[in-house]
Length: 63
Image (cartoon, rainbow, N blue to C red):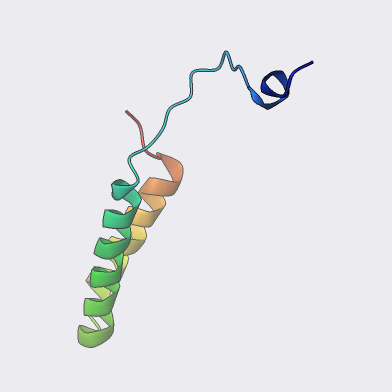
């Protein structure tokens, strides 16, 4: 048995990768929205962000 046999992995699963910029962009938007909420204390903005979080949690990212 060679070392390449031990270290190579063959997968039959179709792996779907995500673009790493997507979560970063979402994090920046979330930070901006919550920062504006902290400064302005606008409750509708907080409710909107809560709705976006809820939608993302239950629906998720679909291609």
